[in-house]
Image 1 (tube, rainbow, N blue to C red):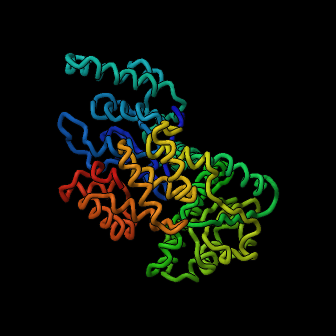
Image 2: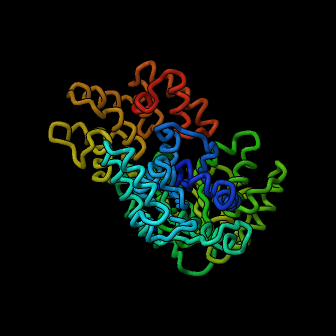
Image 3: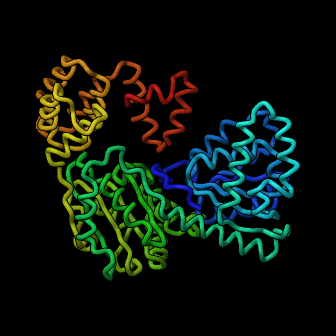
Length: 478
């Protein structure tokens, strides 16, 4: 059951699914087979492999894994409530507001709701042990009540090799795949004007009509092509059996074996069965595999920031290879890389209008829809000087965030007047120059190492903490 919509989305949270279970009941049977089946389908499942005594407190890493998962599968078995660690996990899962799928393993859902049957003795013991923490026990009971009320899967037998287990795991994996396909990508904290642009492109695409649709989004760097592509992906994703969003094609294809790596990503997302197998590090071999898999299902494929026709040849091949009704969206700065053999519809992404630009800048600089009167003139000048380019407005707005002195805004406007018209690079340079020395070092480390390596945000935070920095705090200005 979907408890509530998750605005953050699983794209890309670190995990697709968190598995909560009582180790002594199901670790080496049902849960193990479920984990293996999820993995084969390309679903990133978190399973605590340690099974060790954790002391009195649940491991922080487990709570972080729950927070960084798009969904949770709770395998509630007879001894589940004997463990206050399991109940802590369950409480965190229910608080997350994300997808929760219960598996009632040899237990009655009504017993889960009412904490009766095999759960009565466990809760009686917990009531006594935590008699000074009644709020904690109440939260555990409330979480059990919620879980027992969800529609889930019931396992009646213990033999993991019988047909019931195999059929149930297959259905469970299909449910997860279906739910995850509707999980949105993170677009932007302040996506001003995006709905209007999405509506225009959807009219252009006519996605419900027959045929394979190939759309090219083009425009200057920083104008919002990627943001629009993500919003379109979110609007369309539920209509397709398979979907794939490949970011930063230009950047990654420039690396050694970069195109092969991107091909592997396409294959993994569009056909997890093929993705589990490796092919030789050769672009032609990758093209052959992609050709074989894209005619099997209606797919939604987004290639972001393409700058070479060879990238399209390697990643999508020919239109006729795709299954009827598939949709491909390509973003680029240069229309010359969008020949007719690949693309049949073009949409130019232009700068925001003045009202939208002012609103976007105000959100980032002041966290308000409109600037106050004493900053209105400065804001209008900044909107004009940045050419109403979304990325420039976001960066310069963040640069001025927290600055409330008129002199600081005057200085910012004067600096903007010195840059070349429409130069995004110069706007970014002003923002960089405004960092202190430590922030500049962190920025350069991230740009030169972590971005090139494709390191995830949370891993960067952990590495920074290990080096003596304050992690999230020190990255905030960036």
